[in-house]
Image (cartoon, rainbow over all chains, first blue to last red; front, side, top):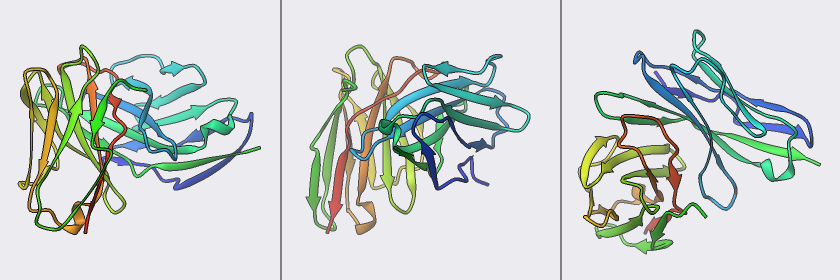
Length: 116
Length: 115
């Protein structure tokens, strides 16, 4: 089974609108971390937001928020007020194995295009 | 600019050859991670070092090896190269030992092309 699943290969959003990028994960480890990264066409990977498995509240970082639904094993990224510069690939990732040594898993990514 | 540097930026080599990719972490970061991003396999975690010691191992082939030096820079050695090794290799660094969660700061990557 895939550890991280991103089911939306491509998404379009109108500038200034909000968009949700889906991510589901699979782990039996009670302690894990969830991350979202942005990869613009230039290629660099940019950290956006992090959610720990024990965190009670959904993480927020500026226009980014993570909709963490633990029972459903989902960690969707919400981008509010989309900007043209948000056009990029977005990757969801998970770290598991707190005590036994970290393992990191990435999804296949979602390509987001912001339309003016 | 993340503060993580990687050299070289591009590398073109032939099958069967050996190459070394270099990474300098952000100042003060003790952990270094290596990732491979290819079109067919996506982004794969290879290996993590913390303060000179191997901390975690992912999908790293036996033909690949890495180390972290006392000055905390890291090198990824790829040998007996195959066409399928062509990929973008990222290095990332973080402040944590890995027992806690934290941001990882990625370098710009080294694009390896094996011909």
